[in-house]
Length: 474
Ligand code: ARG
Ligand code: ZN
Image 1 (cartoon, rainbow, N blue to C red):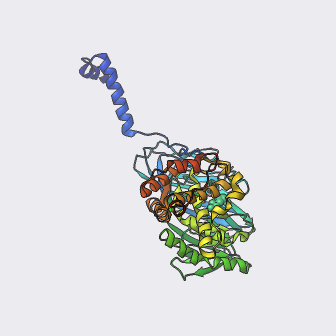
Image 2: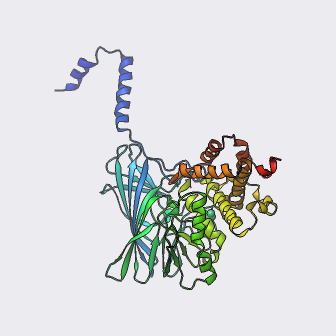
Image 3: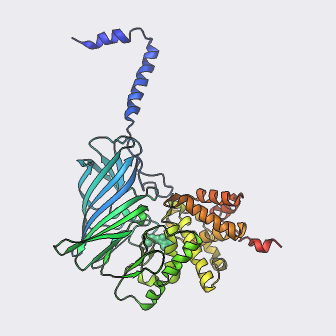
């Protein structure tokens, strides 16, 4: 017996064939969209880094359990990612580079994996429905290999061993993927737990607060750190070494610095100003966004980087100006992060501006405007439309900062600081684009400011700084 012809004659025989085709298409598309599955995108549409980040889900929390063996310079790690699907997912990607994966599961069921370059392409045994929370567990090991990135050719990006038993991770912009799998773009912020196991004698620090130190009874200890505020992957850090920990609880925010035992007195003196700088920034912009602050000083590291709650410093960079610069980033960069990498002047221009303003207000040194004659040939590159290889170039820092000077001269002191505070409050713990900043400036000032921002951020020729309003009123 065959039921099909009977069904066909019962239901469909009276319908004209056009309508039939339409019905068939409708039925198909209804059943398709009921499932609605599609693969998650392999990027987030970043203008400079199209492959960084992925689409189709939103990470809520990373738990990074990591065991470091100094004599082999090897890590063995398990990262568990808790995420929510933003559309039904047949498969999705994570960013991860190098290291060998030994186990991969989605909701604790083994999942299929393809790797192409930095993309992990994960096909779960069962597809994930839109809005569904899910977890991904990735177990991996090996010796992390530095990530090549045109923005920072001078540094080893990601996890790197700077001396025997001395590890630091510096991710910005793309290096996170050499030590944990992630949605590696500032747009997808998440909270973090770090459980770092090291041989007794070494100390492990990471973002946030140390909530537990466990003696494992086998000559290793596990340091548990919690980052309970949202954080972009480029600001995640783990540092391992032989440190002394110096605390300063005399101000509004607990400070704990992880320092090499032979740090110079000059460097210690410069660091002692941190609470003053903190109070100054709180007064200018508003409460410090996180639970704690501090720096970690890594011999052999040649830069400074504003990792969230724990800025990483070369011992040679512990100057008041750079200490201030990295502190300012906790507000501008870390709490308000760039929506795309081309918005980097919102980080570096702001940190540079406040670095100079603090120096001018506390030591009477000249403002950043005094630099224009020396730097103007280098400032031809518009900071609002940089390429990846100029992300940390002089124009982003100085012409970015001068853009704020120009805005201040245009709208006056009071409105200028109102703009910065309004912009900060609107986007705290989130991300903002250049357009978001311009909109905040126009809202608060009630003025049309496109011409000013076009000239400063997007035009080849650097404009002259306008006269400040006090000068122009007479
Ligand atoms: N954001 C840093 C700063 O201005 C510079 C970033 C350089 N990147 C790096 N991986 N070291 O302080
Ligand atoms: Zn900076």
